[in-house]
Structures are given as structure tokens and as C-alpha cells.
Image 1: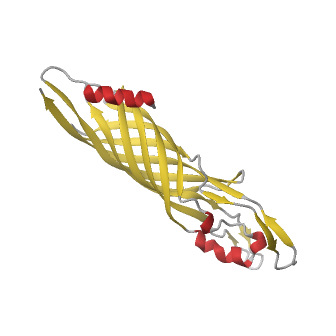
Image 2 (image 1 turned 60 degrees about the vertical axis):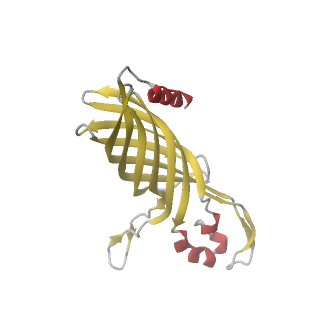
Length: 244
């Protein structure tokens, strides 16, 4: 990461006699999100949703091999439980109950660097960023009626154990395309693992089973996010010419 900062400072201070040209790039990207969650070592079914991101990054046409970027986005993360097909012996029909989705609506802020390589008229790149996220809401309230009716078998997460602030990294790569002097596009794929837990529920002792009258302990539950994102976007160049 220090290498990216050092390269950025060099590019911003670089100049030639007469003038130097720089500026910045801004744009928008979005697309498909595949969300996964690990629940105490057990992988849930994937969640297929979407994301949207606004970004800005450095530009130095004299040395466009490196760039520093900041991006802010909305990401719908989580996981799902998908049921198997069931056969109804009365009607003879086969049906599948709808999937149970666990949704976390997250806002993110990512700071990082990009390394670019020419590829014909395009540029390919890889990126690395440090990411922080804030969970604005979830859909876990929809599962609380079951938890409250079956306290000894509360298999679903509770809303009040959600961690609102999380952090992780973003690693990815893509290709930048030029549509003209001041406009371009991009296609990007990224992997976004969290280091923190999206959900952390401590062990709950002395929970009474309403059917047997016995007490039990609900074990600790830890949930961590990882998402895979495929994005399409537009890039807009803002050029600045410095004259000596």
C-alpha cells in the first residue's frame, strides 16, 4: 500500500518545461452481487442481489500506470437457505417453498490503489483497497416470530446482535475502455471478504424448551460476509493543465 501512495505523490508532482497535464477521473459502476455468509463454520446458500458504487481516482497522463481511488457504494449482502423440492402425495404436484433470504443493506467506503497495463486500445488493471461498511437495515425482523415461538430452537439471527460497523478488503481487476477523449467504460470483478463479524451473538444459557420444560444453552453464533461483485461502469475524465 505504501507503494501506491508513493507512486501517487510522484505522479502529482511530476512536470515538464512549459506545462504538465493531470486531473482526476470520476464515475459510476454497478451490477450483480453474489453474497455468501459463514455461520459458525457452515456455509449458507448464496444470495444473488446487486450493488451500486460512485468513485473518484487520480489521473496523470504522463504516468498513468498507477492511480489512487476512493469509492462509496450501496451493497445488498447476506445469504439464503433454499429448500429442496417437495412432493405432495394428495395433488401429485412437486413444489419448492420460497428461499429464506437474510439481507443486510450496507453502505461502504473504500480507499485503495490500482495498477494499470496497456492492452491494445484498452487498459487492464488490478486493485487493492481497504473497506469500511455500515449496515443501515436488515430483514431479520421477519424471522423473529419463529424465534420467539421456539426459543430453544431459535435458528435464525436476531436483529439486536447485528454489528453495524464492519471492515475488510476489496481485491479485484478489470478492463478500462475508451469511448472518446473524456469518457470511457469499465468492466470489473472484485472479491470482498470481511475481517469483522457482521453478526455476533453470545451463548444464551438457561433457555427453556416450551415442549419438554427442560433448559438448554443456545451456542454462540458468528456470521461473516464475503461477496463477489461483477460491475459495469462509466468513467469521466476531468483534465487540468498546469502552465509554468
